[in-house]
Length: 318
Image (tube, helix red, strand yellow):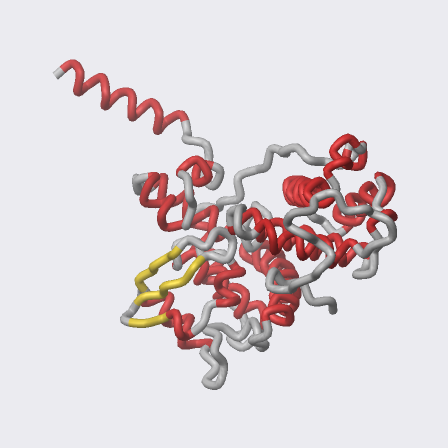
């Protein structure tokens, strides 16, 4: 496995020299060093997108890909590979836009190149991925063998919901050192936002159920403390987790496709429909803008709009 870290330093990319001759240079070291340079001027979420896209692209092409071998046919093949691996269109768009940005950073003359003309770089409309309180209860009460992988995945899903919709990546990397005085305090991997969560009883019960004494992690999802190996373990664990959730959803009678995102979206949607203020939900999720939070929340039903208007007019007529 190749190492992909923002701390890696290569001499091939010079901050003061943007026009690098493509020739037969290797793409990976150029791209990583470009990301390292951009880390000082771009948001952490953007850098994370670059790294994730680069890691995915190199899984398809191999670490030794030469820059001059990147053409529209390769990009189309990569997109097809992503589709065959069930990557959704919006994620594909994020990968393609990140790769395009990196290539333009390295080779400004490629901005006129039709390299990505047939790649999807737009935004596809997605179904809201939240489920009901009744669905959450059915998942919680599903009878599973206590020591089975399915039971563990079910408990991780419930913990995600209980913990203000904590993303699976943050659960996987959550360390015991981030728990103190009855609170979980951590930074989101995606945005770097600081999150503080009071540990409620059902959360504590799940934590105690799976604590491994000699591990720095709260849950037995990762074993390595090396960042590159831990990321590889996380990606494997996420795939397995989603497979388990699909089976759990079917077994519990949930009509929607159950994935790692559903607990997070469901907490946001159910909190909103329980009259929790949007700003509170946004802060709980670690969003930098309430507009991002709105994408997590189901469309406001007409009955709620009717009720809101009725109450407003009643106040006006008093």
